[in-house]
Length: 235
Image (cartoon, rainbow, N blue to C red):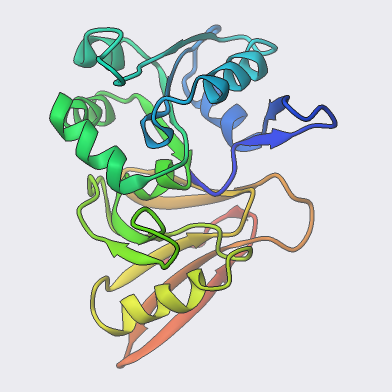
């Protein structure tokens, strides 16, 4: 589940709630009480982020743990990931996330978990990481490409497509220049569900307006196709 959303704000400043994308992941685990592992490497294992996620998921029928890597892993990395039913990766710096994951072997553990049927997902950096890469502000205020993602999904990824003005043009530039032949992108509070590297559904926490997108080169031109909420027609 690759998203530009996941947890949603509430009327309480510090409280969030789990959106449809996260609830859908819990349902896909097909367990009465799925075991959820939170990974917030991209934010430097921000304690407040973990606290908000624990509180939100505490209202649901699941058991929540987390895997932090700063300043050292709080649990055996491979064993912790493989004992989970659902893995949720928070946002932040995808460049830092990828570097730290590789130092601790978490990249390989997540690949193994994917092939073992663990439900994987995340927001922003936690969306780009599963792909070959995409535009990121990990390096500073100006967007730059990251191209060394895990590649479980063999194309590019664009996040915050409707809320950050430079995201869409840079995705188009990357497709036009051949950095990626294909990119899937999501508006804020929208996710794409994939099964066996096939996009099968657009899941949204906004009632009207948002969508996902398929951006590709066709006949030397960049083509953007809007994917409405619901099942995705086969390309």
